[in-house]
Length: 333
Image 1: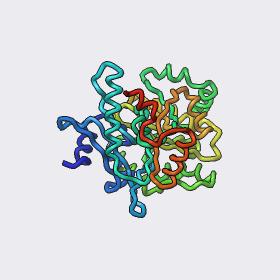
Image 2 (image 1 turned 45 degrees about the vertical axis):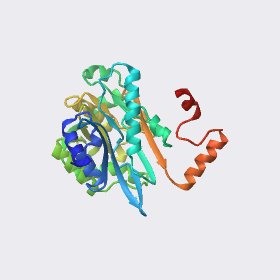
Image 3 (image 1 turned 135 degrees about the horizontal axis):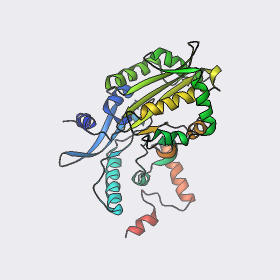
Image 4 (image 1 turned 90 degrees about the vertical axis):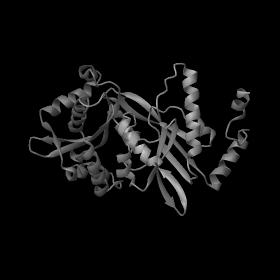
């Protein structure tokens, strides 16, 4: 049985694998022939995986992030070890094996799920990392408490919008795509994904029963904003949203997010705003009161220029060009 076949079986049985690493999600956003997975097994039991999306350019392998996919990276089955050092040691060993199993590549880029906070084995192998942030409600059990923590100004927007706007569920993907891409058009930016791509992903999500679209419609019947939610395991994600530019400063989108959070509480325990690193978007998400949560952006380029730059940097800083810093190697002896 191939690693991919084993992984498909694992995804059916393991609810802790994030939605963005599920086999059916990867089929939709990568194409069935354009992703693979590293699996680690013990006694015929998979205890760690790392799926990846790849492209071949001029005969070289490039590992990248697919469109509309927040995270990928390693998944490690929780250990039963009680002692922290034992658990950490096991994690180090597992991550090292995953790094060693990555096929030769020209470039590598992945965003790790926020549950993976350790990237040292990648660092020792010459990878680099920068920190990104998302905003998460970790517990939607008490919605009254959640709403109490929402910024007063945001609550006023929501309250006012309720008098002018109806929130409805819809199946009109074309209309959602139009309002989702309106912001890109207004900013003179290219829309990163086509309607055909979105339609393919939406079809996979509908078959899995893992998505909903919410529209904010005013009393005149005009669509003001849209929100696209996906969920799996214990988390709902706000995958996409959009607003008619002329209504950008009203409460339509804020109302949609609050209704989306309420809907999420019926199917999952947590809600992930899915970013954003954009300053105005971050500010709006933060005002809802979720927890700022870091996640890792891990990358590496295997080019002659990159190797030369690293070597020169090591020389300038008095470091040896090795996979482990000398101080750490000495500490192990």
